[in-house]
Image (cartoon, rainbow, N blue to C red; front, top):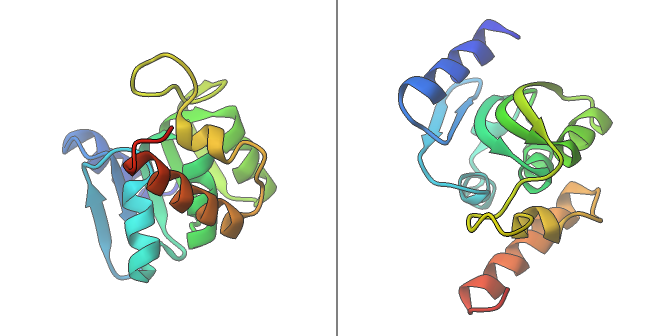
Length: 144
C-alpha cells in the first residue's frame, strides 16, 4: 500500500469519515453513507477522483464501478464484496481490504444492498452510473 493510501486509511479511521479521496491536488472527505459521495463527485464534475487514492468503509460493486468511472488509482476498503473485488481486478486497480464478504448487506440487514443488487449484472461503469441514478430516483419516490 502506498504512503498516500495509508494516510487516507488513517484519516478514514481517525476522523470517522465514510470515505477519503486523496487526489492530485485536493482531498475530499465525507461522512455520508452509500454511493452518495461518489455520485456527488461524478455529478459535480470534480476531478479529485481522477488518479486518486480512495479509502472507504464499505465498497460494494456499485461503489467499485463508480470509482472505475471516476478513474481511481488505488483503493482501500474496510469491507469489500467479492463483486467489487472482481470489478477492481478486471480494471486492474490495486485494492487492499480488511474484510472480504460475499455481498454488501442492506441497512435493515435483511438482504443485499439495493445498490449492489441493481448493478449485479452490469460490468460497464457508465451503464452502472445510469442504473444507479435511476435506482436512487425510484427509491426517493418510495419504490424499492
